[in-house]
Length: 305
Image (cartoon, one colour):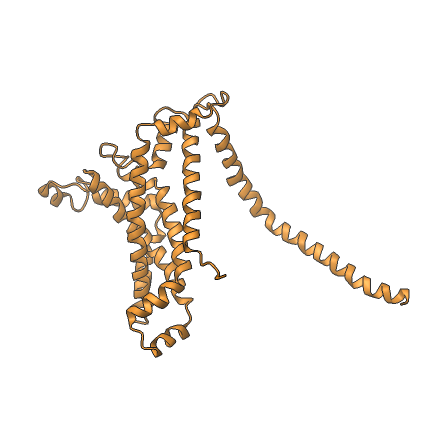
């Protein structure tokens, strides 16, 4: 083979290789701003939290040296720790069950081609546009026994929405359901619309009823959407803070303290110990990772061997 033929074959290969390298550098260039934001706003604070959790770090004064495992033992030994864990888990279970069931029901409702479909979708989704802190302040006024619209009725009945542990819990759950039902409905609706019509047509041809179609077709094909929605709902509930801080301040009788509220209290309201607060944060992070991995494994469809 002549040298000219070898040159004509290797030249395009070199050009393609140079073009691929240039495209790779362009890809890194486009990804660089996002990578910088992630490093600055996530990686660096996360590393700082780990450092603080292993250090004696008061609110004023900075790092005073290593303090492991005392920070973690002090975190678990806090008198509100187990109460906060139990209440957070209870709140998470209640909100997750209600939100998932309601979101799926609303998605099935607005999926139908009815005259009011557009109005229903908009009306249900509007509360999601309101910030959680703003929604909490709104409901704080509604629940007020002095300025709220139900003040006279509540005074006559001797009832307050936030005056008992059970009332405070369910009043906050109602707020969260009102605020997030539309958002999770939208996720469910996207999953429902991704299911091919041919599957439902085949089920109708086979004589399946509505319930059989829902159980054997809709739910299995909606499984990835349900898994994603459950991960978001559980994670958000475990990290609950604004709604309880605004509505209940952890009361009555410290019955509605969440884990994140406890972290805030340890850092800024009580012992003012950022090291113990950071240790609590690390414990919450580890719990979230374990719970999310467990959820993904449960919902993961394994390939048959």
